[in-house]
Amino acid sequence: MANIACDPNARPDFKTTMELGAVLPQSAEVKDGELYIGGVNTIDLAREYGTALYVMDEQQIRDQLRNYLKWTRYHWKDVDVVYAGKAFICKAMCKLVAEEGCHLDVSSGGELAIALAADFPAERVVAHGNNKTMQELTEAITAGVGRIVVDSFDELSRIDSIARDLGKVQPILIRITPGVVADTHAYITTGSEDSKFGFGLRDGLAFKAVETALDLPGIELKGLHMHIGSQIFVLNSYAKAIEVIVHFMDEIREKTGFVISELDTGGGLGIAYGVPDEPSTIKDYGKVIVDDIKEHCEAHSLPVPRILVEPGRSIVANAGVTLYTVGTVKHIPNVRTYVAVDGGMTDNIRTALYDAHYEPVIANKSDKPRDTVVTIAGKHCESGDVIVVDTPLQSAEPGDILCVFATGAYCQSMASNYNKQVRPGVVFVNNGEARLVVRRETYEDLMRCDV
Ligand SMILES: Cc1ncc(COP(=O)(O)O)c(C=O)c1O
Image 1 (cartoon, rainbow, N blue to C red):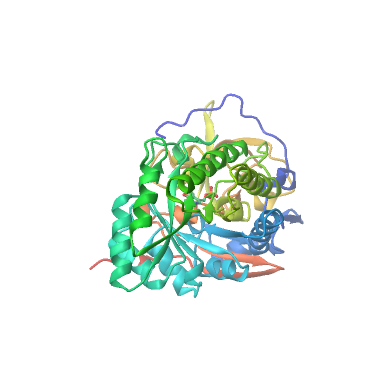
Image 2: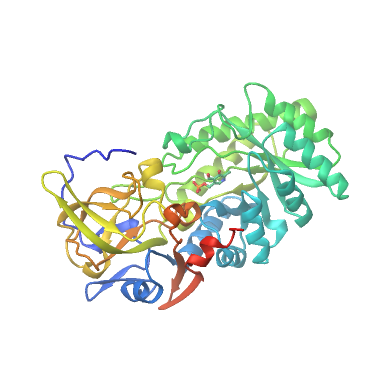
């Protein structure tokens, strides 16, 4: 994003913080004009831990995991919720996921290492990645991960060989690209057949992968996996993909006699980043996923499989906010006003990467209306280093604490050290208490790997 286009329709919306609705963490409240999350004053948090700072509503994360369990198991007893760690992972998050009785999707050796360091039960780990290295596969199989989701023929033979060397048989799922394009941003759609992930159906590769897996002694084929995209608002995308994949389960049984006993439908449920966003509820999602699988299995006289769902964003995004301190306010007459903060693309790359939209407020003026239009800029050496373009905001001054909502997913996990910026800390808040779960980096951390 080199030049930032001005939105000629951008206007102040005169909303105060609490009028931002579903974008806010569930525990957000305003007292004496200041924003509280989890019963903790965000201005105090900024003072104590410094900015930029990620703040996450712990109870909301737990509630989201519980909602997924409740509204999927309501329709079918055999469902597990696999939290997608790529959205946000640290040891405290792994502990929380374990405490809530959920499983964990890891997509690299690094994520697996964090899970194991947090004593996350290996048998509840689902290991992902379109190009897992030999080292990553060996670590996963040695640790005893519950499932490896397989993306290629190379990987099938690697898993077989590593497992046999270790005297093990590794349970796997085969990732299918059902050829259904989810109604979402093109960059994050992975369900179409032109994908680096998984095996296509129409070209017969998916069936060949099943046959190959069934023949390999180091592998136990458990089932199929699909993930059709992210930030999905239209549940019908899932319904279509489920129809296709259950049809494939029937084909497998017909041609090989093998009955698929597990189906992982991936993640992808959308969330409210902006005030107008109206994502589907977890309750509706659970009904569509489970009822559609049941219905299609019945139609094909197939037993209903164990179902896995893999939500990431919808567990953590709205639970998280980022706090910044406003450094400079630059008015460019007849162009725009830049409000620059002490972070930017290093702690939130999504705007530069996806044109993502966010809602910001001035946390210490939370009861005031958003009566100006500004662009929130970061402090990094890229003109595309912006967090929100042409957004309503309360009148900003240097020293104000700016809060950007819905940053709990794919912000900290995608953070970088560009310009040798230290990455922010993460604080969990709950019941009026704050606990630091990831400390802010130091300059020493920046040089830790230099030799
Ligand atoms: C395989 C897989 N599962 C689950 C997820 C989580 O998706 P989301 O965060 O949209 O729920 C992703 C995200 O890209 C993914 O690639």
